[in-house]
Amino acid sequence: MPDSATLLSYAPQALILVAAVAAGFVNAIAGGGTFFTYPAFILGGVPPALASASNNVGLWLGNGMAALAYRRELYAMRRHLLFLSVVTVIGSGLGASMILWVGNAGFSRLLPPLVLFATLLFTYAERVREWVVRKAEQSNAGEPRPGGSLRAALGLGVVTVYGGFFGGGVNLMVMASLSLMGYKNVQYSNAIKNFLAVMIIASVFVVFLIQGGIAWPQTIVCAFGAITGGFIGGSVAKRMPVAWLRGVVIAVGVVLTVAYTWLYWIKPLLA
Image: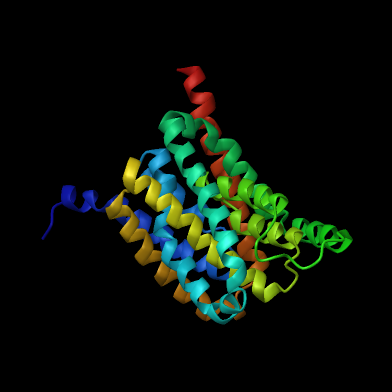
């Protein structure tokens, strides 16, 4: 029988597993799973910058499965994917490189506003969607061209830089960008959004694999937990009160904002 020290050595992985199951569950219903897995990586001893990349990679399979489910819509929009993919890979690759540039100390100081921004984005998601829909309807732009445009590249590029750097709430931002670019069919937009989410994580993965490394044990545990939670969440999605679940996610975001503000801003000033 393993002794207490051996059992404690598995505690960080167990924490990440539980958090990843919760993340997969809420992502399947309401979104916001990063609020659960990222702090678990931190508590598990992974440095803040490396935790951001490893957390994204750990949730990769969930996004891949979502993209696969829209394969027919993606095939119909295949002529658009090259331009969107190139912009996304460049933007998210730049964002991931910025993580390495600011380092763990710099990234930790940026955590409070990053988490607060993601929490506000999640809280006001419906209002953001309504505003984007109004702006898209007021626009005189026609259907988006497969080759894209400079304006579209700049808009999506800014979003994907954020996605590669942190990524909390980036799916909503990508959907908003696609709407403003003229993609009005919700099914096609969802398909493209899921595909670009895979592209963002792939870019982060490549950059960190080459330059920074990935926390593989924790990432593998996260991937397994996220798949499990996603399967459970998908099974109960129609019976789950989404408003209640969104409230839990927002509450977690608020708690994390306060905790990171204390840990990385206030506590160092008092030391």
